[in-house]
Length: 253
Figure 1 (cartoon, rainbow, N blue to C red):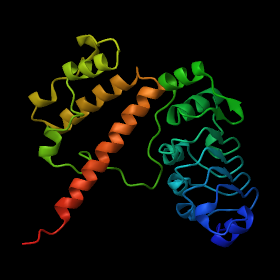
Figure 2 (tube, one colour; figure 1 turned 90 degrees about the vertical axis):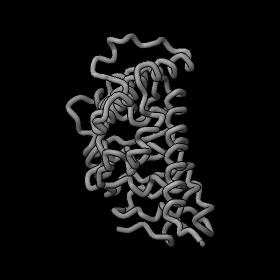
Figure 3 (tube, rainbow, N blue to C red; figure 1 turned 30 degrees about the vertical axis):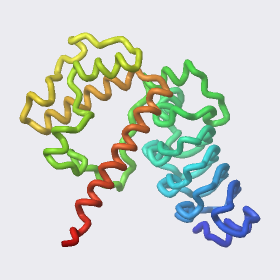
């Protein structure tokens, strides 16, 4: 069943989709929730006991703080990648979905918290600081949701862009950032496979080394520092997007 505009307005007792802040669609046999791309201001959303298998369209709900998805058909924890940009999300109830039927319930919980470190409550249990610290170290890294095209190895950038990309950090540059954050500097043995990206003409290898350096740095960051990294990355993506749009625009003579 598809969630329609008419059903949303009736259940929320609202006159338009922009004014919908809370919505309860418990047990409606829903399979299609694409309408949420048109409900940007929703804050509390109950979708438990339905037939939902994808969270893609919920990624548009930037004000969402509570999401209840118990007893649905979500097949993989990779669907949580659609929720990573929801910075206001504090409460998530995901239990009784196929993706939760893991042999190790603790591993499931750590993986969810690693993907969504801003959660205060998961499956009706409060998230502790100790648990979150463990999650960032032991939780599994999620892969992209099935059916989504992988991004290109150079993120659509030209070779010149890659050479000047600020994320191409050497060991010295990484330690400079750590010093600015008040963190301990990393010894050289922490970079066994890294060389300065500017010393290598091998672009794929340089990108691989860059990723290793960034991931190594992020392991020691706390939640607030990770949010700073996220903010900087999003800003850079927007800047790159604007630059590409300018390059595509025709030049008037």
